[in-house]
Image (cartoon, rainbow, N blue to C red; front, side, top):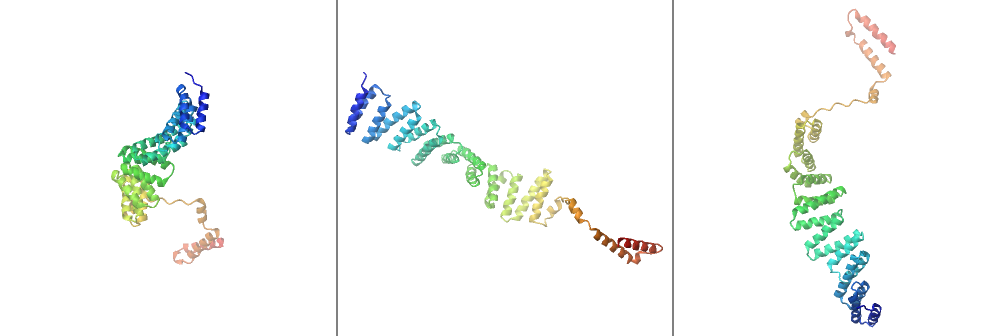
Length: 356
């Protein structure tokens, strides 16, 4: 049975003008009986419920409208309706995710993430860790580069006792922070990672090196002891360990470590590197007999041609030296003897006259 929508709408408007909202709603329902997809009528009913203060009925009505818009690919209209619902009742947590989905359909990832982050925070406050984690994982899928989200996921896995999952996300965060050169943040996250998995000696060694760069040898030492216990012959670890001992003003221990490095390099026939290490020993202990004996003496660097020329005596200096030599020879008669004495003396005097 067809109905006259215009006539019913006019009557509903009269009731609305008089403040008779319930009667107006009854009129609108007549239209919806014949056409359940009349969205404009649904919206008018939602507005009336809102004016009546019937929040539950209003939100249910608006959600029907929003669902219709989403199914019809009218996502922008759906966004507007979801916002209206949240104004009526901000505690409807599922609506935040519906709104995020609508934003994603419009390609507005940033807006979607804002809604999801609000939702995750609400689940955290209401102590729903499983639901919070699900939202965080979805946020991570939308924006894989968001380190903050990844760390929240890692920490929640840690609380849940899921160590393997926590390590996975802490590791990913470390890689991102390292690529971005965020040293301080990297150290903090790496410490959390090592707390969950102390076997990651590459991370421990990297953290130790950063501690040494920032003048914290004591902290570096704790990480290097971990590395040393797992691989005591790693030259890189030993080098950092020696630096840590030097920073702690413990030269004897540093020398002991340098000596071990030198032995390892000797085994590998890396003599130049070994000699460099032995020179470090001599820096700490110039009287160290082993280092003094074993270090290969470097060949003196040849002088440059210009320096060699500069070292030559000037013609005047050369002549002066020659004259002096001649005079010395003349003044040493004991060197002249026999028949050759007069001949040699005459020769020297002749050379002196020529030079003068």
